[in-house]
Image 1 (tube, helix red, strand yellow):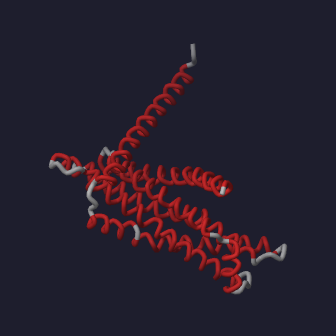
Image 2 (cartoon, rainbow, N blue to C red):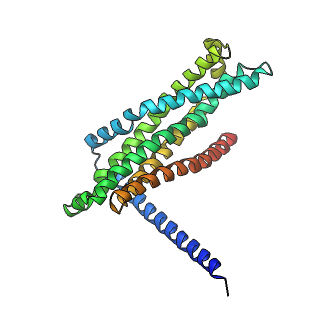
Length: 267
């Protein structure tokens, strides 16, 4: 007969796995319903435009600040290391590829995703615990079409735009550090970056952001819709939305990066 501590551990682990599988099932059903309504419902242009401002325009300052300092740090570190071999000018090309493929898309998704997922989860969670969503259902208004779809579409449209804009900001940060810290002329920095960087590098990073946008919006809306327990429940939903979206972004980025590298090698 097993000791009680082992039995309790196995029972606790089993209970946790059941909860995780149940929640994944709920998320899959929720995502399928939301994607179906995106495809078939009539677009709510006014609601979408409002969310595009809240999700996109309001997120530009933090996204640009992050990209600017990422570009600076990348050039600073790679430049000093390559200077030992007399190749500091290569830091421009290495930084440009890293920014386009990985650094800017991922970090932009992380900082924007944390803000957006938390905002969506808090807003929808408050509507859930105050029974506003229940009231919409009683009145015959589908809450997924009215609340989820505009946020999904707005995030899907705005995150790639923010990423492309942040890419230029990050490159500008690299130019600044390259000029003042490594004494690389801006024109030489620019020409070196163009020599290394290809359109496929840019496409790779931008395409990832569409997947990140779906993750951010779906995770935020799902946690908000399933909030319960008053103000404390809204807090838990917001925390879960941020943690889950960031973890999903990192996992999906590895999968997408592996797939894109395999695709590029095949071509």
